[in-house]
Image (tube, rainbow, N blue to C red):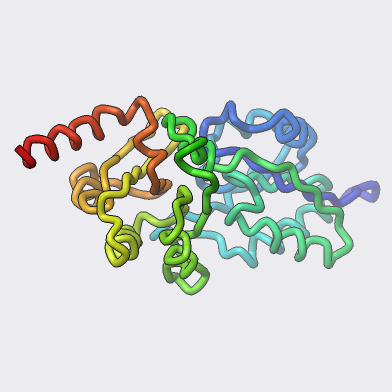
Length: 260
């Protein structure tokens, strides 16, 4: 171990998936990395911004697959910073939006190591935007909720029941496995006709959008074989997307024919 090492960790938000959506500040942090600890949803091209001599270590987590426990990742940040210097912890989206970034900073700083944060573009707003869905729009939605679909106890967040009562747009992360529970929450308050979209691998070449209403989205998701990572958007703003205009035009046509 070099005697002149100054341990430092920088948490960098890589954005929602498209590698061009990382910030300039994030790239500059990578440029000076001695070690990069990166997550599963990181586009590998981003690693090219780090020096060739930098260690690149995968510590990602994917649903249903082997993963590196969070505690191990925290320890790696400290150990590698002490041994090599500047560790960049490259995380999808924004480190502080369901990214456990706050926990990592707390742990790192208990060892007297400097921890900086470079915010990232959160998938909660960027993925809907890339599909033409504004999470807020004057006259339609005055606010939006961002809710986790799976809490630390593996349950659907109880906040959804509160959000569903409002006119706000609701964006749910990590909720594909809870789609049935999510739609049931809205059915209970008679909102079966509320527009909903599921965007899989948003902002990337593999992006796939499934849209409809609370009453039919489960069947559509099954037919389209929707898988994680995906973001769920619920609210009237969904029908504002020009890319989804045909979906809702068809639905209106069907209702008109049935009423004749």
